[in-house]
Image (tube, rainbow, N blue to C red; front, side, top):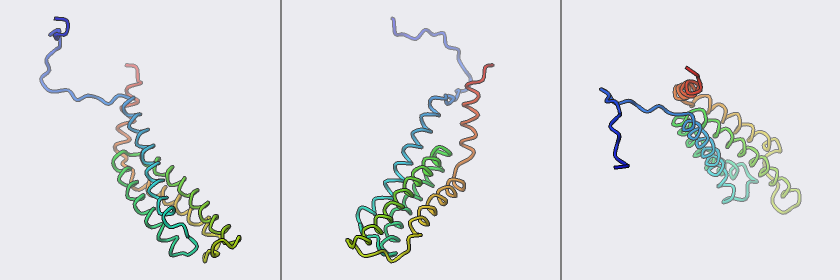
Amino acid sequence: MALDPLKTDETLDTPVRAEADTDTVMLWGCGAFTTLSFTVFFVSCWPYFIWLNVSTLADLGRASLLGLLPATIVSIIGARLRGLAASCGAVAGFTVVAVFLYMRIQQAFVAGMMKQAPMPEFGREWAYLLPACVVIGSFILAFLFTRKDHDRKAVEEAVDSFTVH
């Protein structure tokens, strides 16, 4: 028959574990980066669309806590599971969140100056301070929680697949 095995395979004493090829390693890394960056952004920003008024420190703190705490937990889990690619995705997501926070806090000041909303009870430095803390904190999280042994092994396998023997 045309689809029968050829019976030319050699028999092995022990099963051989399949090696990860470069394409699979790249696909998992890119997928982890993209997934975690979008997840961190959406999880961090949803409270600001529920509670639109961030003119008090209590409102700003509540929205930040309800968004940034789950995003931090998700980024730690991703960094432990997928290594450096996921950590970089988390840093990218938190960087976009920092830009969003800067614009959201500036929007509260503009609305206050136009008498459309109360003037925020905190100073303008919060528009720089909170986003800077988010970005610095994301780098610290990436440094502390990235699984290093996983990445070293993946890099060695990828280099070995390109090496001519």
